[in-house]
Length: 91
Image 1 (tube, helix red, strand yellow):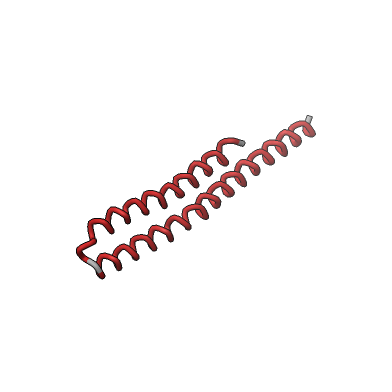
Image 2: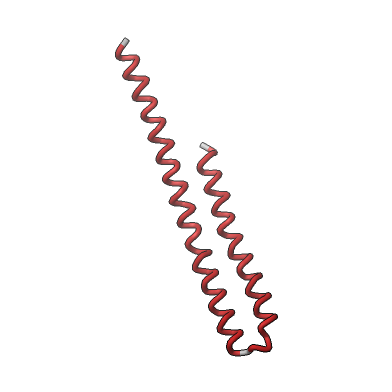
């Protein structure tokens, strides 16, 4: 009887370890996926500010282009989040 209880406890422990490692892997994956878009948005905004400082008359066009660049870059972070959800809850 105790062998059955020990076997069940070992199986539960292995299942919990797998769930824990899956959560760590998914969180690490999303963290790494968010680094690139964060750096990209910083570069886009920095270059837009430089362009507006050099040519103030083009600030409206530059701002519009900057927001489009931010939106496309942020889409990468959202794709990373979707992959995180798939990894976390698919298995």
